Length: 631
Ligand code: F6R
Image (cartoon, rainbow, N blue to C red):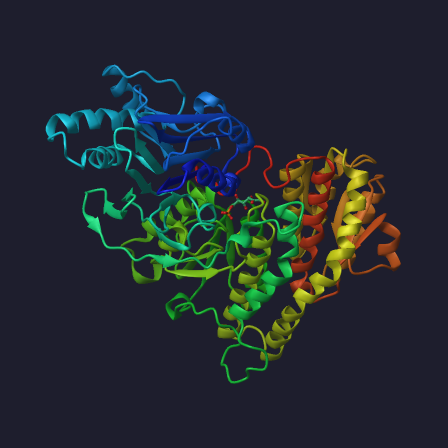
């Protein structure tokens, strides 16, 4: 959470920083600020609320500084007020710092600094950094000869060694106007290389319109950016040799391309995402020579003697993991546990032998998921071979912290997702689980070759099926949004493999429309939640054909008998379904196992249209951020 950006070069920094922050706003958006060095002074401008508030403040200024840092905030320490917004400065206003992360030992540092006469003006943990840098510059100056060109860098390096926690910082100092120092410890930071200009940012969309040549810093590394180039060091001050690489992301991928919101664009991208996953995970159609029709490219040792799988994830990724559990258990017959990463960290299941642990995180940066995997790795260290950690990640960002942490990754290939509510990345995570479960089933021969090929063949039709229903679903959900924009409570029901889709439907609605919603296994309603139902509480029921169709219809009848308005997401438009549902959103009829790939789309559209109808900020809902890098 929080986005940081930095620039040093030949152009005016302000516009580059502002447009970079616009691309990072998904990481936090309760306040923003930038600092530049102009006419020998730090010029720091900050504003509460969305970035346009900052932009309108800055537009009144004349400033063509070619160095600066910027920040968009998701509050952790201190309220979202201007005085807590970044950049933060030292008392003399010579050093400015932006941070993504949390300094765990900031209280001690603050007390020490206070004892030395430092005064603080914010409630943030970050403010200790510029004060410490200023303090160390003073000390370094006293030690070194005044012309040393290392003073600022050395001061920041010393500070980096003092800090505990997960952080990424960009630091400038008015006394060293040709240097920008970037520091990374457990929070993402990438350096960009242009022609005589250099960038740093929390994420690549912030810089991709300027350069595709990038270098992600590793934990414990810092970079010194000057107009002449970039040098990377570790925290011990040892120069590191690094390889610049080219981004595949293009600037148009981070534009709305005619859609009103990123979320809607991303919903519409799902057929293409499923196609990309099909191409990557499965051998080409008709390739009978292949031993297995699946090509995940994971190392053999991952599969050997596998007895158990545990999956850790948060939010929408946790819902994808629940679908994954269903698939792995039903297809490959391997007992599978799904845990909230934030719970697993502090109450892990007892150690089991030959266990694969999968972390699912689209961003690859979710602190709880990374910590759960880290804990698992640590507690298995030094154990006999069958208890040793086997870790795997499913992520949309293989270059993320997760990518560095686990040896095996399934890349979900959804392309960058800007809308804070996950849509296409969820579908891509489902595709990764289809491929993994089928791969395991093929290796263990838990399903017949014919069944395997039948499922893969059906999967190949999914993109077309999504495409063919998107338009009619959009019209229908838009129409329903008209009726439900003022509703206060919603219930989503599903069973079996569609229970997680009911949870996901409820989560989508909650997070972007701020309407209270609950997802329930349809059969559980009668054990309590049915008491909530009346004419004011609509119920969305997922009733796909297959093993639980009749059961869901009966559960829907029970809700109807309590006066609820029933909305069916179903391929059936006759018989009992036509009687029980007041409204029907059609989905194509497919194998029950594949139905989540279709049923989730109207859930996303319904949430989207209700939020849009309520006039809410669909892409940046209140209190949320795209990647949750704090515990
Ligand atoms: C919901 C949503 C969140 C994330 C959760 C985990 O739309 O986006 O619930 O799914 O914060 O994020 P990742 O997948 O990045 O670990």
